[in-house]
Image (tube, rainbow, N blue to C red; front, top):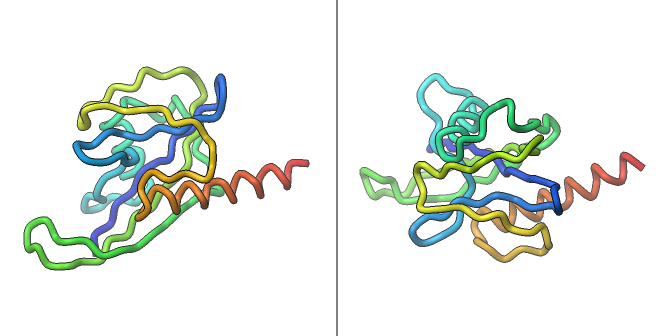
Length: 142
């Protein structure tokens, strides 16, 4: 099974927004494949740093949030179908950070305005999960 991990990065100033990285043909999160000997959390942190320049001191990791999704992909080398599991954590920026896209042609901050229709396989289900998480989290803080 292919394993990948990354972060859904939010900022709340001046309004709630989330970060997506521009690929040639789609938008995606800062994420990547798990290297041998890495945990999914180590992978997510490494990929976030490599793809955006966001370091561990720039955000708060929400320990209560973990989104996982599994689907079939075509293997890069073999071309044969393989299972892929993607694990996404939640990062809340603690300050203004300059995004430095090193592996992608660009990035964009998207306004938080659910329901979202960006990419139906992974991004949209993640954002629906995040919306329910925020709703539940806000309800428990009242």
